[in-house]
Image (cartoon, rainbow, N blue to C red; front, top):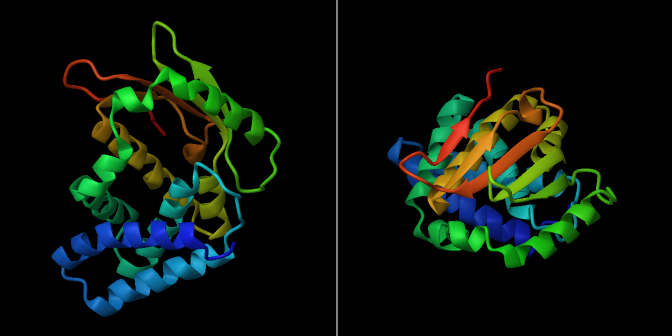
Length: 212
C-alpha cells in the first residue's frame, strides 16, 4: 500500500497518543522512534483497501503491531498503553462523537451502501459486513464476516494480536456513551463478529460474552 496522507495522519495520531504513555513508562526516544519507523514499514507492505471508512481501524492495527515489536511488553500491556492513550486524547473524544451522532438514522443509507460494496470483495484485506436495522433489542447491528485487522495480523505473522485490538472496540463505545453486546469474534475462532449497539442505559456501557 502507498504511504499516503491517510497512512501518515493516522500514524501521527496513534503515535502521538501512545508516545505520552510510553514516556510515562520510561521508554527512551530511540525506542519510540523505532516504533514509528516500524509502523511505516508495515503500512508500506500492507495490502490496500482503497478509500475505506475502516482505514482508521486498519492503521490502528498496523500501529499496534509496531508497538508490540518495539516495546518488548506483552500484548495486554501494549493494549493498556493504547487504551490509556486514547482515553487521554481530547481530539479522539471529539472525533468519535456521541451515541446520538453515531446512531443517527440518517447514516443508515450510507451504511447499507457500504455493506453492499463490501460484498463485492474488491480488496483482499477489506471487511465484509451486513448491517442490521435496529429493533427492540438494539439500535444498530453489524455482522462482520471478514475483518481487515485480522487479515493484517495474519499477514504480519502475529494473528494472536487481533483479539487485543478487538478489545479496543469497547473503549470506543465507552467514549461515545453507548452499549455494545458482542458474543463472538473471528479473532478468537468465531465464524463472524456480531456487534449490537444501543444507547447506554444506567452505568454499564457494554457486555462481552467472549469465553474462549
